[in-house]
Length: 102
Image (cartoon, rainbow, N blue to C red; front, top):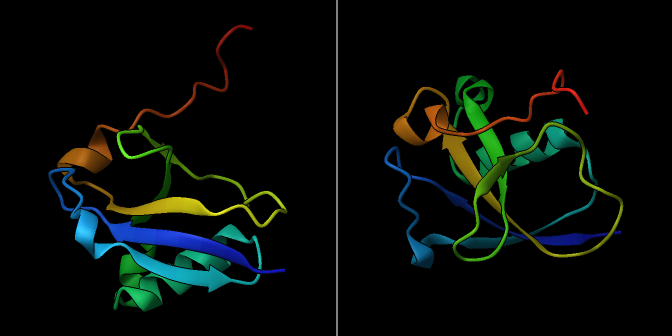
């Protein structure tokens, strides 16, 4: 099964160039494989892969949600944003509190 994704690399201040989206197809749902594939397509070296956060963006003005698990098994198209650790936008990401009371 293939999944069509759109991906873009976010600038350090959070700006996304809407003309810079790249469309590609991936053949699995593994997050590590996805991270390596995206880094390769964007010309990043292996060290940069470990400093990259892959986020889903829900809609044009959606909040960036960091991916921590594999993609669901489906062929729905998704928008992915690559963010660098330690940047202004990377430091402002909100992560879920897994220890919060329910």
